[in-house]
Image 1 (spheres, rainbow, N blue to C red):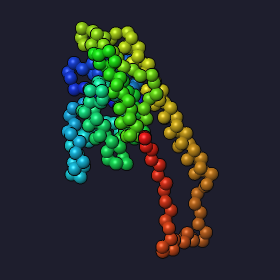
Image 2 (cartoon, rainbow, N blue to C red; image 1 turned 60 degrees about the vertical axis):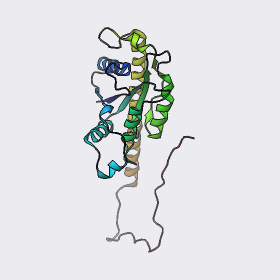
Image 3 (cartoon, rainbow, N blue to C red; image 1 turned 30 degrees about the horizontal axis):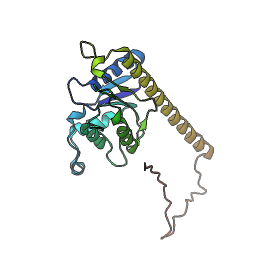
Image 4 (cartoon, rainbow, N blue to C red; image 1 turned 135 degrees about the vertical axis):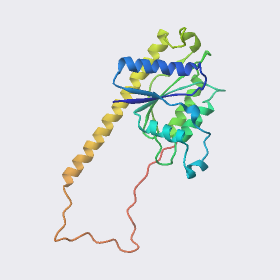
Length: 233
């Protein structure tokens, strides 16, 4: 069962970004009823403080990390505040990028959209959000930008995003997200099968008359594991 976590970058009760994500939830419910969809309320997270990691994080941080770690994909909708990502969303990603070397964002599929009452649909915040997710080693969904302009005009009387053009754009993003999840699952399966074949070809480790490999001489260099890091300039 595919698990999807929705993250709204706005805390407003009548947020158009939250409305867009509720539409995403309905689309998934109709098109992929076996999938599980939950929302991550980032407003409950404290301000990031590295000192807290030494003494233990709060229950809200632990729950957020566990939720993301158990997800197959994230769908993040962001408003644009002064040309960038809201601080509350940046704060959430800072928490989720930790602990170093074990971030739940690493290798996680993430789709991005934005919504705004303005004429640009919040699209100016998207490059910064993609950069943040890249820095956290998430796998962002490649798709034409979904930036819902005049979003307040696309809501019905109940405050739900039901307007046709917006729903079509969201449905296409949902399709691309599930396709990305399927591709990642296939790649992981291929890697596992490759490892299994290699182990089978090598066969079991045998010893002769109980002999064991000699211990390395004192001062000999230990084998090293190469690490690969990526950076954006």
